[in-house]
Image 1 (cartoon, chains in turn green, red):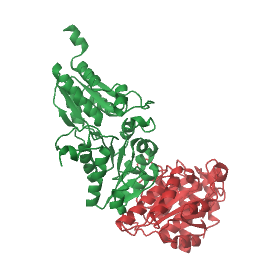
Image 2 (cartoon, rainbow over the protein chains, first blue to last red):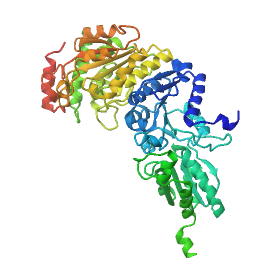
Image 3 (cartoon, rainbow over the protein chains, first blue to last red):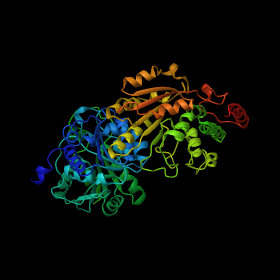
Length: 322
Length: 270
């Protein structure tokens, strides 16, 4: 099987396959479903003693998962990110995160990945909510390869983990194996002119395209894939602030409270520099379209990222006075 | 039995003492729940107070976390921590908060926000099944608490998983902050409602220690089904000035009020 064949499909599909593999090897792994679809035929059929569908009831699912973890199991709770971080937010905060219990919440439909479904299924403020949760590790894989790595890492993490996935197939970022470490950003492109920090499938892909657009202009942009939002790679952000002219952050999320905010909080304290945050201006996008279309409409595109990065690398005032 | 009666009496004294500390406490709902807690810890729960995390223990979750004074009284009575520590209720640096903290031995989950305990207990019961441990999970719910929708998610799903090691207890004292539950959002016919979701349901006088023990001792009543014990109780039970009074919900006992309350309680001393 070629690399492309192995990692074809959506992050959700690769996640489900990975979870089944892990659960076959470790009977403590327990799949808690809230009628998401996709587990009942494979996981549910093969490992019925490690599978419970609690129905369309997210609050009960997260509370039960905390009980399962307290009783010694390793539950993977499944829902959409909007429901996990809003409807079941209190169970997540008090029962899971507050108690530092090893529950893994794997939430699909992050950001605008369910774009055409409309605002009920968008999840543009999930990272903002999750960043206030104690003990919680928050992972946002950029593609199916990283999804597999993130799920394997989540399975053995000591505390609670939230993995934010998308919905549909997105381009592969990784063409070969690499070392995935929770809390350590991946440098996807080297450069010292300006830094682009991105999280999630389309933001990372768009940022790589942006760096390619900048190259002919002689601007070497560093691209960091910030797959861990909490605990964030503090050192990588400080290095970017020190070594490059400024930072562009790119996320499929509202510009407040998420990746951009986390980066600003660090550079403000450690090494102030210019930061341009790219994402949605609002957490409520009352529009229809694909994830890419809605992101572009929100002002996130390779061209806009490149323009923002160029402006930081070579500010207009400097060009005009040169 | 006399010993259990004496324990319940002492626990009521402790509840009043906690109510007389700086912040006051949820006196009425603690007094209605305390006989249930006393019977559970004296006769029913398989626990080791000197080893609170014993893996084969029965679990108890106080979903109505505001009755923490009753829990503290009973846990200290059973040796989870020194009874003198109850004097430090609400004090900075201590372990006794208005709603239980997990740092206190015997507290499995911190609670306080209503509608969490039943899901937690169901998860524990299911987890025990899957890990092959003999643990049972008991959870005490307030009656007003049943207005929280998440309870009904759990009530609906627990029978589906065959959790006959799960026991819910409803402290049916009939009151919530603003008045009678039936005047706010009615819960009756409560037993019928639980039964219709697939639960075994027992109704019992929640202050009859023998009847409570009998109800808990016969669990599970049928294989594969969770049980709910609806304990008919009186808010403020044992202290005449608080009995069946809405205003007993949260009380800061002044020295004078404390004396009156203790004098009333002593009239029922076993």
